Image (cartoon, rainbow, N blue to C red; front, side, top):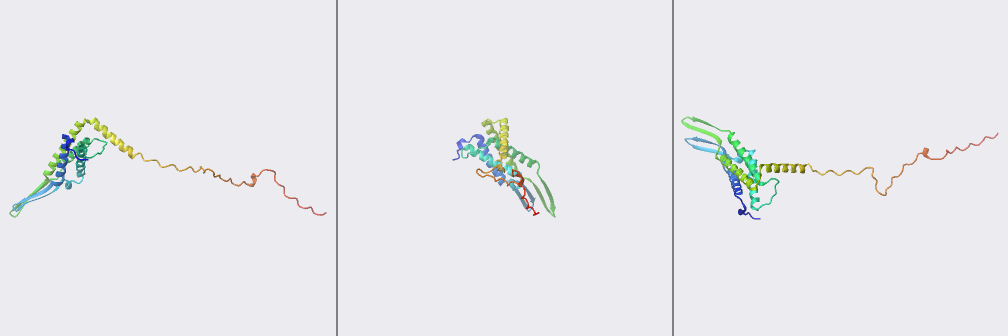
Length: 221
């Protein structure tokens, strides 16, 4: 199956472009770093979004993958069923990624130090870099593309709740439907054609009168 660009809607194009841009900003731009300035020159160091945040990065990576898969499904190059519409997944994960980046922007360590060593003045500052702002724009655009796809699919918020409930119920039914173990064979059952021998009878169970003991011989008179 080939990738058919003509099948992509405007919403799918926005999703695909935003996912690629998000990937580039996440791995190839500094999201956090430090820089120093002095008469001898400036030095800067930083880390990209993948190395700066060890927990949120997995949500961002999953968002990018799901968005690219949704575009591939829309283009006809991939057939993959999902209990929830792809547009809903893209919009939901995009919104979550946007909120996480916004939280990292609001709550981040930053500051600076300045001083002098003799006649040499220096300053050091650390905080977020331009990459995190670009990532915020890309994730917001991805969310917008997912929202447009939902509108074109005719999906409402009530439909989203129904799809989510059905997906959760399906997962619960699969996890709780373990086969019951086979019942053990009954201990009282006997094989056909095999008779169980009866126990020997006790002497008291014989019928008939008791046999008298033999008479002793008489003594001569």
